Image (tube, rainbow, N blue to C red; front, top):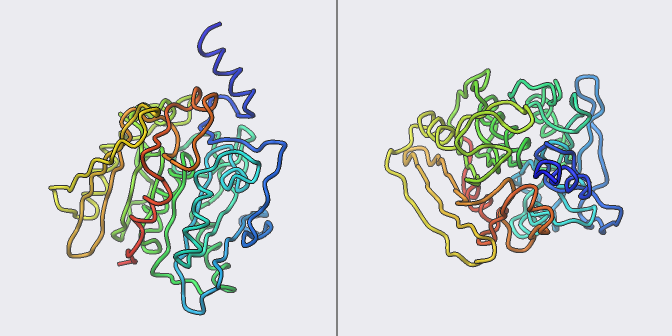
Length: 329
C-alpha cells in the first residue's frame, strides 16, 4: 500500500477529512461540558445564523476583563476545539487559565466552505474557505458579548490553530486597532499578502513546526490546494517591520523535557521598547501540524497523519504568557 493510501485510510479511521488541516474530530463518546462553558449561542450576521460558546470566569468580575477569541481549524468546531467529543484538546487548557486570570473566552464556529467543512475566510483565496466576512463577524461578536459582560476593549486577543491561526493573522492585519495581540499556531501570512495592510501596531506570535506538511515552514503551496503561504521566517519579518521592532532579538531554548516527541522548541522575540509591542516565533524543530502540549498529547495514529507533537511546552500557557500585559496602542 502506498503511503498516501495509508494516510487516507488512517484519516478516515480517525474521523478526519483527508487532506485538510484538521486538529482532531468528535467521537461518539461524550465528555462533560464544563460548568461555566455556555450552551451554543447564536448571532445573525450576513444572512447566516452563526454559533458560538462563551466561557465565563468564576467569580465574574465587575471590572472590565480581558477577552480571548479561540478559533478552530478548517473542518473543526467549537466542540472539537474544547475536547467535548472526548478526544485530546490542547485548547481546553485555556479554561483553567481563564479561571485563574479572570478572562472571558469567546469560542465561535466558522461557516461551511466549498468542501462542506467549517472554516474561516482567512485571506487565502481558495474555494474551500467560506466567502463570509469573518473580520466583521468576529468584531460584531465581541460587541454583542460586551452588551452582557464587562469587556476591556484594550485587552482583546485572538488565537487559533491552522485555518483559525490564519484567521487570527487576518485580524491582526485588518482589525489591528481592535486587538492587542494575536497568536497563530501552525499558520503563516498568506501569499499574496493580506488585501488590507494593518494600520496599527499589534503584537504577533507564530508557533510553527519545521516539518509541517500542511503549512510548509519554508512557504509555498499548502497541501491539497489550500492556497499559498509566506515562509514562517518571512511572516515574522513582515510583522517585525510593521511594528518597527528592534533588529536584534532575544532568544531562548526550552528544556528538552520529552525525548519521545523527537522535537525541540526555541523562542525568538523582537520588541519595540517604545510601544511594548512584540513579535515572537516559537519554532518547533521537527514538529508537525499540531499544537505543543504536555497535558494533552495526541495518539500515535493521529500523529502519523499530522506529524510530531512537541511535549516540552504547553501551547496555551505560552500564548497567555505572550498576551499577558499587552494592551492596544
